Length: 139
Image (cartoon, rainbow, N blue to C red; front, side, top):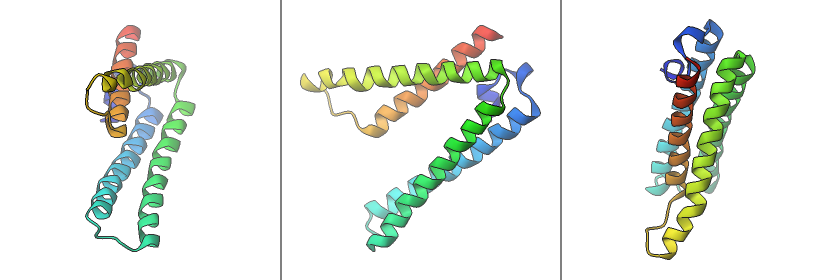
């Protein structure tokens, strides 16, 4: 799935597809751990402080694994794939930064407070849009 979304079909090498599957696996592991950890901590099912810290650190470690898998993907990708990904990241970062900082003005005039998770979601959507735009440009 990851390689179909982020790679033009004619330039996805076997290495790119393998790295894409690795990213997807790490991302799914992190997402599941994040949801489970959030539920366990919010519901106060886990109240032991060391266990709570272990949940948070474990979740962070899985996320770091995904980040390292994405870095490996970029390092092993050809120039076109790397360019598409970097354009997507730049666009997503720019959109996220613009919205997160500008939204403070809307909060001053009565808009609801923007949660960190919502700001990150905006960045992710910006990244996907940036990748799709770059992919279309280079196909």
